[in-house]
Image 1 (tube, rainbow, N blue to C red):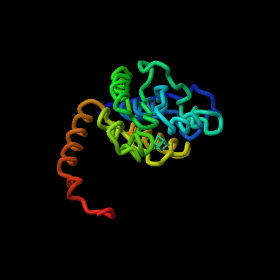
Image 2 (image 1 turned 135 degrees about the vertical axis):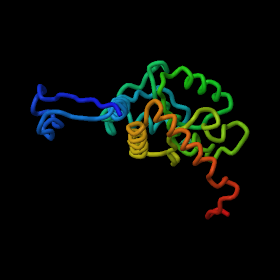
Image 3 (image 1 turned 180 degrees about the vertical axis):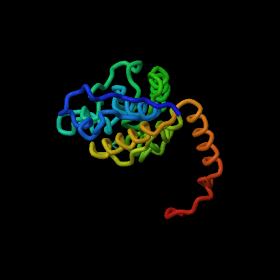
Image 4 (image 1 turned 30 degrees about the vertical axis):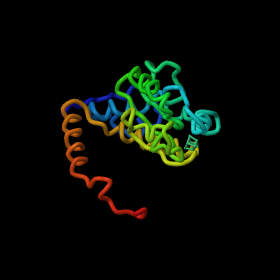
Length: 198
Ligand code: SF4
C-alpha cells in the first residue's frame, strides 16, 4: 500500500484541521488523498432538460449555495466538467446529444439521475421519452422525486461524494469492479422479485 505524508506544521494555527493533529503530520493513502481531492472539486456540466433543472438552478443559487461543496462552477464546456446532473426527462431526440456531452466530459466522470423522469421515465411512459437515462449513460446515483427539492439534490451529491471518496484505484479498482459484477450477476432478476406492487 502506498502512503502520503503531509507536513502541516508550517501552516497557520487557525485553519482547523491542523489544530486536531498534535504532531502536525497527517498520514493517508494515495486512494484516500485522490478521493478527497476529487470529491471536493466536482464540476457539473451546465445543462438542464426540463422542470427538474429549475430545482438544480436553485441549488446553485445563494439560498442553498452549492459552492460550499466545491461546486460553484457549472461548466459551459463538457471538457471542463466531471459531473453530469441529468435534470429532467430525456427525449429520444435529446439522447444522442446527451451521450455526446457525456463522451466529451473529462474522466473520471460521474452521472446523477435527478428526478423520476431521468431515473425511469417517470409519468412519461411513452415512445418519445427514454425510460431511464441509464439506457444512454452509466448512472452513479439515482435521486427520486418530482421534482426533488434542492435539499434532496444536495443529499444525493453528498452521497456521491462518499462514493468518490471510497473509490479504489488501479488494480484495486479492477478487483472491485469484478466483485460488483459477480454480485450483480448473482442477484435475483427483477421479474422474479416479489414486492408490494405484485
Ligand atoms: S421528475 Fe417531475 S419535475 Fe422532474 S422533469 Fe420529470 S416531471 Fe419535471
